[in-house]
Image (cartoon, rainbow, N blue to C red):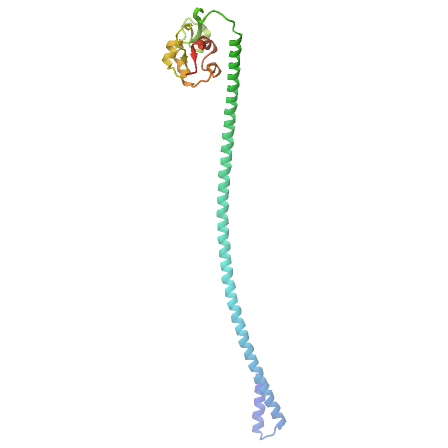
Length: 249
């Protein structure tokens, strides 16, 4: 710009001086002026280009800022979703662990019950084998009708009398009253312990009411020996009634 002003000043001086300046200098000044105009146009063009670049950069900056905000919002949403899923998974893991503990406890309970059943089964088999052996080794004797009455100690609902032994008074247990076992008579049917009422067992077998109700509550029976194997009746009482009972219909 300063150069252009100088050239214009020279031209003005030259015109004012009445052509004191030579033609060559005039032409040089005109050439410099044209060059200065061209440079000014290039500068303006460059300025416009730079302004457009600045505007483009501003637009890109705005887009990048908006993209960054969207990315931040998406990141926050992903974080919240991840936290929710983690909490849900942890809750499911806790529930599954509790179920595993419950199943383990149930398994242990079933294992104990199974062991008890196995023990009862072994005791029952041992009892059945013993009774089979006793039946097999039993010598032939008089007929059932001619056998003498057998007495067995069965529980009685009566309490201990004052004249009972000190041990019985201390324990507070009912006395054992011997009940005669009437021998089976020909023509009398056996008492089915799976179907007979407690009153019938009291009447026909001579059991106490408590023992008869205990027999009724522990039904059904597959073998007569289960009365002893399952602690329903003492062996002495069972030996008295075993020939007068049945478990088959």
